[in-house]
Length: 64
Image 1 (cartoon, rainbow, N blue to C red):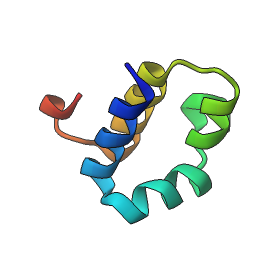
Image 2: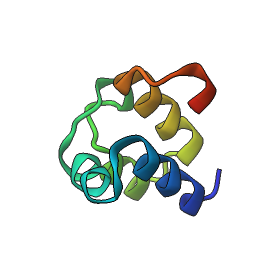
Image 3: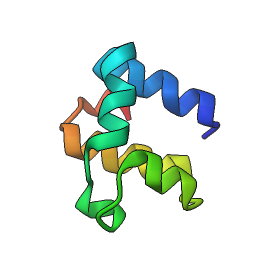
Image 4: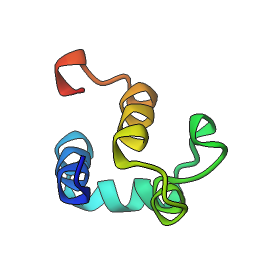
């Protein structure tokens, strides 16, 4: 998944303003106690990050 696609999905799920804030502040245990931003910086694939976000937010399966 391209980074632009990832951010489009984040913004769709959380809204354009809150998505960036959530990505910066919310720690996900599934990502080793990292935030989304830290995970991206650490080189974790965006599809892996998205799947963790999807589960954390309990989004509808069609949004996977």
